[in-house]
Length: 120
Image (cartoon, rainbow, N blue to C red; front, side, top):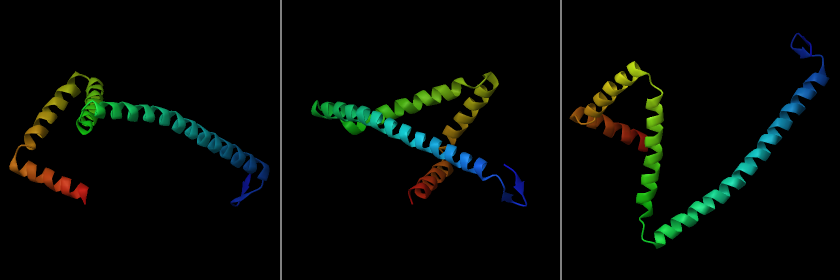
């Protein structure tokens, strides 16, 4: 494709580019549909498991929170494992400082302001 003063002179190349990109977008849409169908089956299975647990007297909100927190803690562990020794040492100092900050009146006030800001 050649370009002269902002004008495309080879429309064949432009048409091929657009056609190829549109084909890729169609393929992505198809893959997304397959993915959603596959996920639906798994989500239906999860719903069935939760219903069975509820029938057995399990507090669903508590178990869902536990599951979410386990996922988060696994991610924290993976993140920490990527640090070298110097970085891990600094991270632990920073984490302890941040945890201590949250126990001070000023830190609590800042956290409260942040929660209010996020929930508005």
